[in-house]
Amino acid sequence: MLRSRVGPLLRNAGFTGTAPTWCLRSALGDYAVVNFARSRWNTADEVRFDVNLGLAPRAWWSFSTRFLLDRAPKTPRVHDGLFDKRCHPERRYPDWRHPVLGRDGWVVRDAASAEVCAEVLCDELTSVVIPELLALQDRATLIATLRAEADDWGVAAWYRLPRKVAVALVMVDDGPSPDIAEAIHIVRSLPAGRFEARDALLDVLIHAQTPNSVT
Image 1 (tube, rainbow, N blue to C red):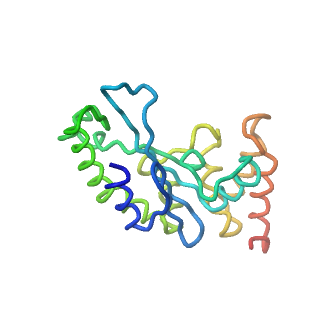
Image 2: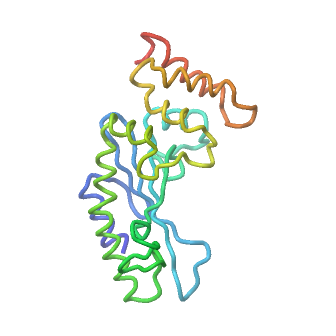
Image 3: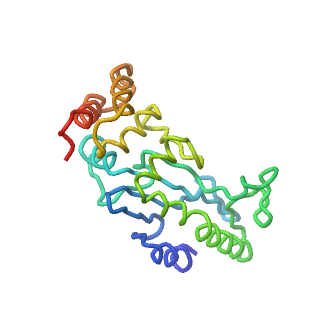
């Protein structure tokens, strides 16, 4: 399903990569990631999977490859993103009951259910996921969406960054701003051990807040 249906669909929209992960890079270097992950609880009779979406803004990806990742890949994986969410089409319906998937979500039990998942998934990618990620290629739209906490985008839990700091990292290419100034204050007040490479992160924010320092 991924190689025969999903891969061509994503590549036609400008994504690169192979199953199970595809990336879309904006002109400014911001990445959107689509990833498919099987459940660890799968059995011979039932295969469940998640559709994971991630956002790795340019400044965050540059910071991660320098300070957080020992062997950084050429493009981010979904867990390298600063913001993430899962694709759950059933949640747009009353009682989370999708007209085709029901409340099961992405689950394959036989050839028939595999075909159903493939049809719903391709429709979801075409009508919802791809248009949303293409829209977020625009930096202003990306910032506005994340500041408004819209469309269920959350800060990746394992990085333990306050949301205002994460959003400010998207803005560092644009020079000084009240958002970055507030983020500097927040990072300085973080307890020791809250975030790996805290001092390096603080340097990135201070550099961006210093007039004429943004390159």
